Amino acid sequence: MQNPRKPTRPVVIVSDNTGITAETLSHSLLSQFPDIKFVTEVLPFVVDEDRVFNAVDRINGLARDHASTPLVFVTLVVSEHRRLLETAQGVFFDLFDTFIAPLEEELEHDSNHSLGQSHGMTDIKRYSSRIGAINYSVHTDDGVNTTDYERAEVILTGVSRSGKTPTCLYLALHFGIFAANFPLTTDELDIGKLPDALVKNRHRVFGLTIDPERLQQIRQERRSRGRYSDPKQCRFEVNQAEALFRRESIPHVNSTSMSIEEISAKILHRMQLHREFL
Amino acid sequence: MQNPRKPTRPVVIVSDNTGITAETLSHSLLSQFPDIKFVTEVLPFVVDEDRVFNAVDRINGLARDHASTPLVFVTLVVSEHRRLLETAQGVFFDLFDTFIAPLEEELEHDSNHSLGQSHGMTDIKRYSSRIGAINYSVHTDDGVNTTDYERAEVILTGVSRSGKTPTCLYLALHFGIFAANFPLTTDELDIGKLPDALVKNRHRVFGLTIDPERLQQIRQERRSRGRYSDPKQCRFEVNQAEALFRRESIPHVNSTSMSIEEISAKILHRMQLHREFL
Image (tube, rainbow over all chains, first blue to last red; front, side, top):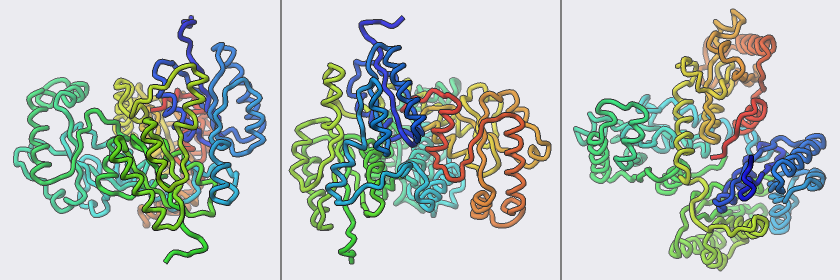
């Protein structure tokens, strides 16, 4: 039974493509209302009248089930489909209607009203380069294939579990950045020098650090026994890594309270990397 | 020298966080104007007055350099900062101003106007589960560690270079989906049966296929000699894989003209996977 005093508000994303744009925006906007519980349903690939009618049915069904009018975020380029959709029982936030008209006026151009321009395969060369970046990040993960560092736009380094792998993958997937990563092992930390593979590419090296307590938690979940997740060991490794970054003037951030998106945005900004949006 | 008849239109993203939301939306909108060349600059982490003034200077600088008013997409939750920013010489598209007011009215709640709610670390449990998904996809890439398939929400299969790895990584990074992938090698294709690891988990298996000509191109770039990139071999593998999918009733899509986002959205939709937006 639902609590009638704090009902769940249904949210529907209707898109003629993947729905990612509308989902990203709705997520940003609704996160500004933390006291309300939202439940989101995505209806992608709504490209013909039949699917618009299905979407109308679904919105009306959710309105009934939740006894609450769904918030509907819409990216449909065909205006007839938008008009049809708006016969459903929803509160509509139409991204195209809202912004395309003022853009057309400002740009003195009509928009082409064509489907699948965003998050699609409109530019195969750019797309191949992105796939190349993803393969590169997998290929150079965890300090392997350092001979291919010529191609790297950035090389992340830091102790084990400081966030290097997810950040590299995000940089590749989202921005097409060639990002390698090299772990600082206890051997290197004992010597207190930057490993050779990094020395040769120091202008592209970026450090990740993390609070020792958080590191210990993460490592504990992965392997609960032994030196790897020992609090003293975690403190030692982090201290050594941070000292190394300072000594060698390696730019770095503390990833403890940052998401992958935030870490990536900081790296792009600090390293002045060309941010190609894909 | 710029061509005066087709100038480049500057676009600026100003955000108090990563800028990803505004960048995603601007990209979607501007891709509807394929005849205009845009050059985009992202100014993330604009969190205090100093940085707002820097953003104003930058926008005015771009307006001068391009002799064209920049389009400025804004996500700043502090309204004073928005007002200050709008003193710059730009055409402003304010995502918060546009949508937050109607949402507040509809939801009968004030928004909390706080920073970094989206793409931040607001929910550590959800965030950890996402990192878990990323590590899982790396850990089970390319048919290794099949004993961990219990945890998989989906297992992608297909011939080498049909798009399995990038799709798995995207599903993990973007939606926190535990996605493994298993390559169909010539051994399995010759036998014409689903490999044991997949038989046991067949309700979670999803196939990727690709046009043989495109496959041949991709393989050629990777390894230009030998059977791997031979046109006849590519045709053989694709035919066998598609026959196997049909015989075993494995849902599948042809990835040839689809982006990773589109493939992922299809998989989530067809497999009815819970799409947690992160």
